[in-house]
Amino acid sequence: MGVKEIKFTTHAEEKLKRLKNLGVTKEKVLKVLSNPQKVVRGYRGRKIAQGLLPWELLLRIVYEEDDKILVTTV
Image (cartoon, rainbow, N blue to C red; front, side, top):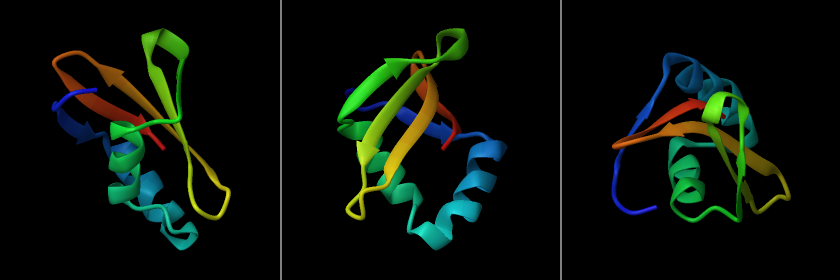
């Protein structure tokens, strides 16, 4: 993906707080964004990066990309 500024919407930040008990952290989200196992098309031109976490949880990160990356939900 190259080096781009990554921002999180308020919704994505709130979702991360709820997923903390499953071990999902911002660092893990950034790791999947930098090296996804798969990227698929999402609604309204968004992309969905997918990566498997160690305990076999599929992490899906919905984002918009132009000159920066905006994570809209996790």
